Length: 124
Image (cartoon, rainbow, N blue to C red):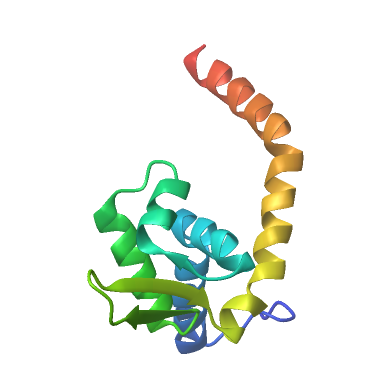
């Protein structure tokens, strides 16, 4: 059975899953949102993404760069300055990410209530 707009070929699904794994990752979403207003340095991103380790931020930025969503620019200063910035492809991700964020904010209390109800049923 084919659902409109959703491929039924396994190779296509695998490719889509790979993309969604990147753009749906909680750290990637936060980094994209932080870079929406322009380039930022690594340490600035680390300060602004609460709870992320240096290692996880490095992995996230490398993945976003590999996928063509972020560029990394090294300036020949001492110490070297490194800026990260959204590419045009990365900017095209902003609208869906912002919409998902707004949806999450609008529905977080309903989701928490549903979780409490579910957990109460399971523990009874």
